[in-house]
Length: 321
Image (cartoon, rainbow, N blue to C red; front, side, top):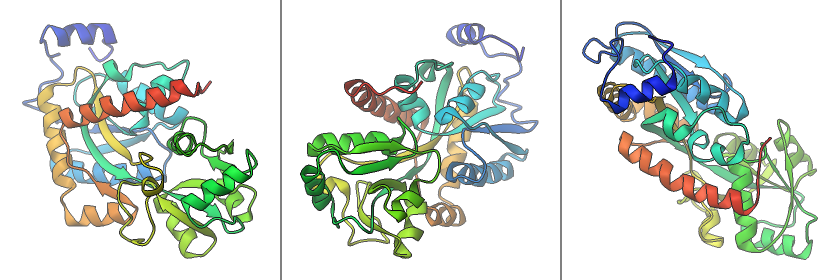
């Protein structure tokens, strides 16, 4: 039964049937696998392990993290999507796997709208717009003026074509009416910003803060909808360029066909975990903001953000081979 095809599972779901191995009344009675679509040691992996430990304690079975990184989360998402919908496999991933990647990748091997179902949002994350210390701009407005005076000469880095930082920079430059050269990195973007080889970078807040405090780079703005609590005098990007907000997020998913009772149970546990003071402290300490949500709310967020990202990606003909 564990090798049921996606077509068979969808048919059973449509008929209201529940496979015999997915009995919510006895679930869980063995270890649960949490596929993490990120490399070990990264922020998503660290957060996923916090949740895994808490879920294991609550459900009284081991929750085993299985890192499946690569292709902006597609490899992990594909593995989870093709797992048996028996409540023993879940996915932890950054939202781009369901809101962006289907518009970016020409050869995606799963359908995020049909093969995965939302369980719960976990955390919101943001970035900082940074500038090299040798750049003659200390605000977003000054950076825009500088870019306008040096048409196409300034360089911004990102961690890959089609990632959140790249797409938000595209949005920012479009709305501001200026051009910059984009240089995608696998690694080393921060080092090149510090040395001045590139002028600007949208960096995850957790890793940006130490560099800002050390004086190695300048912070021009916070990408969230609100100012960062540790930098109350630092404006948001949208205060200068309205509508440019980057609040990425991580969430839990299950293979399509997973019993609704199990999904609701896990969703409730994640919301409960997010209220624990020790969990909040650990998440906030790494620049994650716990989110309260339901599967329905998560689905609505995916739907809205997918439409927004699709419009931006198609308008700029951005593709990842």
